[in-house]
Image (cartoon, rainbow, N blue to C red; front, top):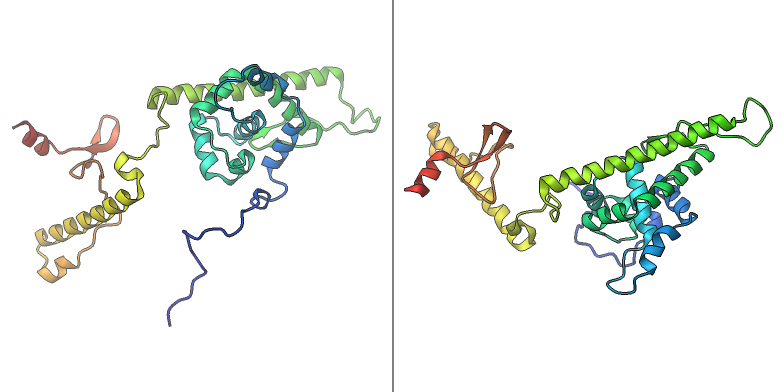
Length: 279
């Protein structure tokens, strides 16, 4: 009797539109960030866009602010990584309500509204502390919840409040500086208009991707049979030979091999093949 599995239909269309609120538990950090920012004054950001009527409508400032604040709270500082999370991560998709700004738009938003974002982020952390949160994602809040009684043991001195305020400001500056450095480093590494994880053109379309995957599978199987024949196995055993689990195939240069170089192990083309092209 064949084994029965739970239904798995990757191409199944949804008959009814899903509710974003059903995708995460009610106490998820993303909802806290969303509710706090909905109750803050974002006029400093909104006024920049309201002065200009031309051009394509920008992404909503509330959405962009929520995504950035949440990203920094959970330790995602690179705009390129935020872009990937907006496609792959449920919490980011819920906050963005399906919007998917690219990394350049995210980076530009951070640069243009740096001062406003710094102030808003501080307000989010202050409210989290006031609500009694010890951590906000990966951001540890070294603060005390001030309770509504007059006990001298529960009150916070004015000096301590100023100290906490300075600590919050410094934490926010560090987080935004980390985001700036991450974007600058990746711009140098990949180029300003590349995300760094693009597939080769021939793998980006599903029809050609499936064709190339099958070709690669056949090539690896053929190589396994040839190597089995070289090892002296009889014809029947050689025909049954399978590629090793770690066998690799380079789609852009099938004859390349993983070789050790000055920068570690990298794909390289054997010298014999290069000589053939020179002759």
